[in-house]
Image (tube, rainbow, N blue to C red; front, side):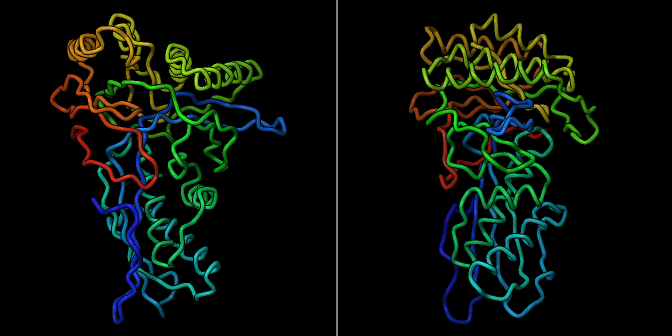
Length: 347
């Protein structure tokens, strides 16, 4: 994996080159329709951070070439290609240099279609690499604006890791919920056999007034959970949001997942509202945590639900039980923190 922030190449005779990195996430703790400060409705979400998998990008500028002469490898990363073009125009405007073409090389270990934010990770890494090649470090709100233009909706992976309610279709923060999430241990898994979810094919359900009021209540509860460090309340919010999400996603294993969480003494479950990934949430301070996690892994296996990764949202040196695809625990990371290689299963 390429380091998060290396200086652009400046030695004589070498093309200016920049690098960028972006993490993924583990689906959402809360997603729905909320009111902004002006009382307008907008779609919003709160993601669950996960250190480990991510996307690295290298951008090599080719001064003197046409700005549309951009190549991206792998060639199917069309959103990253749009992001590169937008980032070149933005950086050229900021530096006063003429826009030019170049080459983007992406190295990603985020499975596609599971709801881990793979496309946003591609896009943000690309934008950061282009900016680095111009000797710039773009602010988060600018990266968010470019990401939305590139892929129509994006996750808040360009921000500093604080829990935020983020308007994914507008690229703006609706509310900073606090400095950090309450600590969690997450046993990750995939529903639907891990098959990618085509979000464009999902039915569109318009939110009514009652839905908005329900989402606003969950928002208030999550704000309180973050402020007080209440892991139990956070789990209740995530479970309620995941349950509402089943009106669209309809995962057949969802009832089994919530039953496993109850039997294992977890505080709740969370899902990717636009994918197949899910997580069973545990309070790390709960007695017998190791036994609870082992029991959860065994129950998931018994129900045919593939476990993927056990991780934490806080820094730790302790080890948790590992399944075949588990590699201990990870720490919460900011946008420029080096990551370990991904250990998600091949799905």
